Image (cartoon, rainbow, N blue to C red; front, top):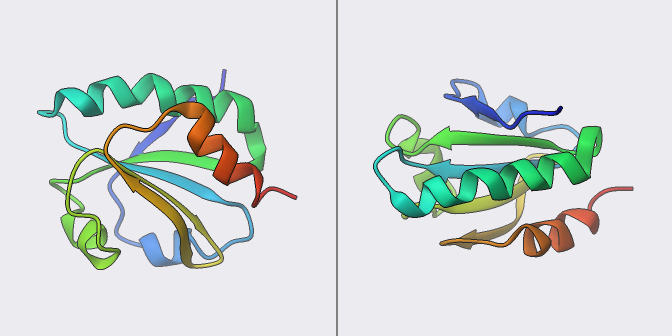
Length: 107
């Protein structure tokens, strides 16, 4: 089974440079809505498979990255490709909503 990865990123910019879309949830362990997002991200990963990278970044540890992209609340989900944030949503997202935007980027 493909697992959603939990990262804290020191090299985020280089990580999002590729042509493979990267779905990122900025989460916090103390936030109940973030706990509900973990199975959503797992569903996205299972459907997208190797066509996309799916990961979770701890907002408290990686707040500078979140702020750089104008994401100031948790949960926030963003899709990156070729170094650019191409979609984002603050708050809880449904898997089908994330996948709808992600599939536009998967060739």
